[in-house]
Amino acid sequence: MPQKKKLRLAQLAPLWIPVPPTTYGGTELVVHNLTEELVQRKHRVSLFAAGDSKTSAELVAPISKALWLQKENKNPHAAMTKMLYMVKQLSDSFDIIHNHFNFFMLPLGLCNVLPPIVTTIHRPMDEFYSDAIKLFPNTYFCVISQYAKGLCEEYGVTVSDVIYNGIPVEKYEFNDTPEDYFLYLGRVNKEKGIVTALRIAEETGQKLVIAGNVVGPEEWNYFMKEVQPRLNQGNVKYVGQVDFKEKVELMKKAKALIFPVNSREQFGLVMAEAMACGTPVIGFNRYSIPEIVEHEKTGFVVDTKEDMIESLKRIPEINREDCRKRVEEKFTLKEMVDKYEKFYERILYEKGWGK
Image (cartoon, rainbow, N blue to C red; front, side, top):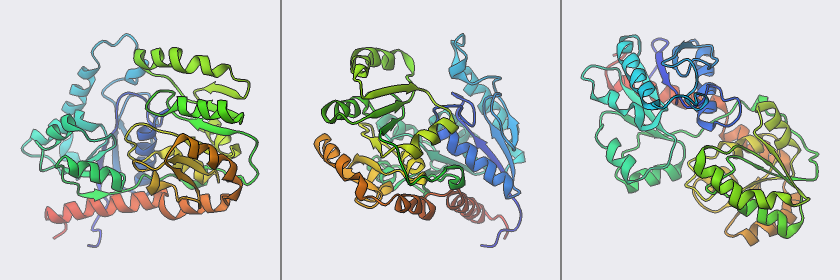
């Protein structure tokens, strides 16, 4: 299907934090990279996002500042209603509407006349999510891993395509001479497995650097009760939230990234980011992790905490150049955007565009 013209695209980002994120925000980083590359390819792109976002596309802002930065806002869902209205009002300007804002933007599918809608499912599927999604059979659903596809299919959700997240590898400096520490990078909460990482540090005496944020009362309660007491180890350093430059510095200098997630990880962008720097990843043999990390080649995919501890000793066996090469072969921004372009064109071709 030859491309007949450049596309007019709407990218709908979550309103919780700015695009790109200043610190935490995997989905927002993916949306930013996708949007910027589509603009570079001369598509006409409108990014619906918070007003403090930065983009080369046309920014359409339902709110002036990201919701998590508006402590006084007691009605965040009002912003989502406004975003739905704005997308509908401008819908004649688009060939494709691409939703990254989960179920909040699904009601667009109730409109009788609207361009095709693509929704990338960035969060785990469950009964409640699937019940909502199945109300919109005319929406095209895309997932970011084979694991995510299987999870959707378990709940009877039809998946139109699987497109891995990609990163601009050139922005991640490769380093073949790491320093003497392991790294935990992500939300400092139960789901991401922070206590497992801390227990590994306690049992091995290995140096561990922790970078990440804590969001909401429930996470802060867990942090104070379960995490804070374990931060007193002399071999543990907690540096809090980090920006992109600081993140890359930490990743490229680490001996390995410890990734002990307990939640249903759909992709785990930080694994690709770490490997792009040459840094191996140690994760559990569950969720999307075996798709991202090649066992004994770019890290270790293990079953238990004890296996993780054994893997720390084997990190010198990993060739850091192999880590970088895996990202260059499977998880680049170019690869991701190429596939999204083909996905858009396939949908439009089915709808009669270009015939």
